[in-house]
Image 1 (cartoon, rainbow, N blue to C red):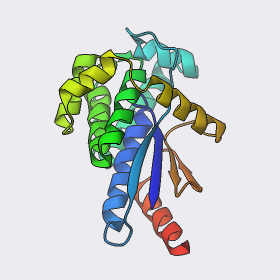
Image 2: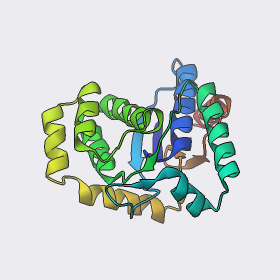
Image 3: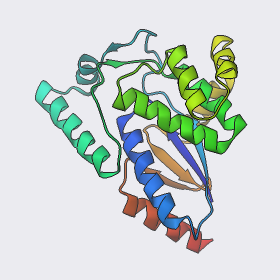
Image 4: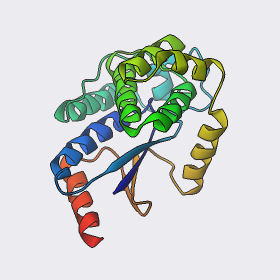
Length: 211
């Protein structure tokens, strides 16, 4: 079974959805072999490199009040905790294009390395409030994921895989993906949002049974 996980490092519901999906994958591991691939999507493609204040940006983008923003963040923290993801304080929203370039490169090395790097990026951004466009941070995370940090630094410095990431983003948008996380199974079945592990597991079993 092939699973394409279309997401952005800047998306908190993508962190919830991925951890939830991982629990479902653990539950079906004995019955359903899975290949998990991460695909790029940018929530804030025009974001400046130095980012903007997170609270002000989110209130303006979604038309929320301070109270609504606080409530929204509380819900996300609860959903994250339920699937083992800890949200911390995140003061700014940053550009994530370089993170996607590095994830593309990681996927060319191995699916396991890409998966480990994706988790590390989500933890750094949403758990620790770190900047996913910082090349030093990205290089360190690549090393922690078992990748060559020297080569990772070269990928970032030389602007590699920019065209490939742009092409992949366009492909998924043309396929109708406009929100994330979007989980596409066997290039046919779409599940959207940070669903519960039970919902993901049921969907995976039903699709596998249908052949």
